[in-house]
Image (tube, rainbow, N blue to C red):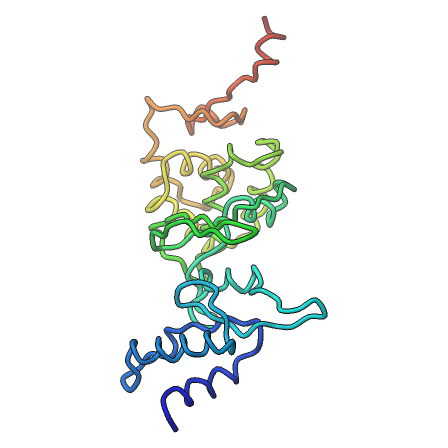
Length: 251
């Protein structure tokens, strides 16, 4: 059997509408050049479609004709390596929606990864990539999601910052102390001081947790203009920003 025929037969086994990652076909026997030529031939013959560089698929058919590769299938390429190895997670508005912080839906999808990537534009949506130094894996995702929300708590559209604060605090206070310590360690190592201040303010009443490493990061000469009026704002240097309406009423 020729190399082309072998690749063609292997592709036939892949479900229609699913990503065919060309990288999975490279091995010691098949050079990159040989595989690329075979894929180009299959595209010309109409056997497969090219979604973007290195990404192909066998289109599904509907009564209206051929269907493009779905958004969710495209996203998998940036969220997983292989079937289940996590390499990224949804952030931005999709993340805020997941935690019930907003109902806003954006055409721009944000994905956080450990690699710097350029923005990708598709017909109906755009993918923006955010870079995070913290290791992204299945175990860490729930901690990184919370820390990302704290980092961007002022950027959540159509939301009340105090309500968002309470929702996130309620979410992770269900964690065990082992989980909370992982959250603290990730914040301390990879996130800006304002995130550490917010996290510390949320955890202060957990008396069996050691927050000393978080407190060391807080400079007494620094204040964080986050817009929250908290009982422990002074200790964590969180400043309540008055709204214009409130300032006018006060005057």
